[in-house]
Image 1 (tube, rainbow, N blue to C red):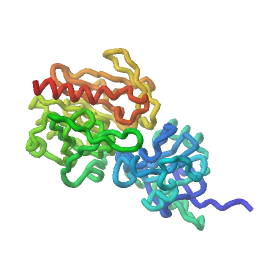
Image 2: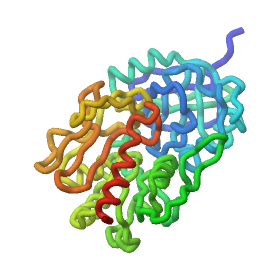
Image 3: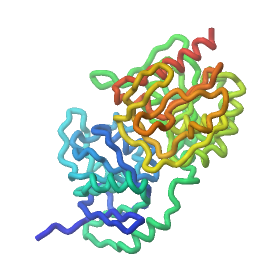
Image 4: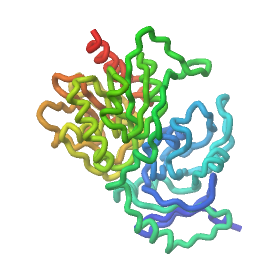
Length: 382
C-alpha cells in the first residue's frame, strides 16, 4: 500500500508537491528559493538573511553530517523550512551532537522530503522565487485550496523590513575569533585592537568572528541604531552586516544614519544587506532579482585585479550598477549574470561586497576583505 503523503508544498500558481514531512508540524507561508551548496545546511538554516524564506536544496544528501551548536550562525534557525530530495538519514560525523530531524522539530522548523527538487528548481529559475505554503501533518490532511489562497494572498518580501525583526535588541561585545583545530574558537589577543561598531541587520556569527580575528574589538548595535549611538562608542571603523528583506524598506531608517557616518571619513565595510544599505546611502538603487543568488559556488570577478573568487551568496535583491553615482566604483561582478557584487568610494576607505567572505567556499578567496578593512583602520590610526 502506497505511503500517504505527510507534507505538502503549495505554490501560488496552484502547483502542488507532496512528500514526507519531518521536523516540526504545522504550516508556514514564505518565499521559496533554491540553494546549490553541497555543505552548510545548518549554517544556511540559521543565517538571518533567510528570514521568511523556505530553502530548496539542490544537493540531495541533506542531514548526513548532523548538527552541532558550533555551526549555528544565530541563536535559532531563521529560515522557515527546507525542501529536500531524500529524507534525512542518521548522521555520521564526529562533531554531530544531534540529527537534523530532531533539531528542526525542537526549533519549530518544517521539512519536506521526497520532492523532485530538480523540477522545483527549474520552476523557480523560470518563474522567479514563488510564494508558497509548506505544511506538515502526520495524518496527511491538507486543505489545498486554502493553502494556495494563502500563498497568493501573501505580500512577499518587496517593501518588507525584516532586519528589525532579526537584529539584536540591545548592544553587546563580541571577542570570539575563528574556529581552529581541534575544535575551539580562538580568543584573539590583540595589544591595541581596533574599535569597530557592527550594525546588526541580521549578522552571522562567523562575520563577527572574522572581524575579531582581524584585530577588532567589536561592539554590536541594533539595526535601528542612530549615528549618535554609533559615534558614542568612538569607533575607528563601522561594519554594516548582512540581513533579510527589502533593502529599500530597511533603508528608510538605516540610510540617514549611514550618510551621517560617511561625512566622518571613517572606514566603513559592508556585506550583503550592508552592501545594499551603503549603496542606497551613496545614491544608488536596488532591484528585486528573479530568483536571487543562493549557494557556495558563485564565481565573482574583481574587476580591478582580474581575480576570480569562488564565493558564498545569499540575496534576493541586488544593487543596480547603472545607478552608481560619480565617485563610486563597481569593484566586483557576478560571472553568472553580471550583477553587481561590490563597490568602493574613490578617495575614502569605504567599500562593500554582496558576497560572504566569511563563509569560506573558496575556501578563503575573499578573506582579504577583512584585512583590507583592518588595513584602512591601521592607516587612519597612523
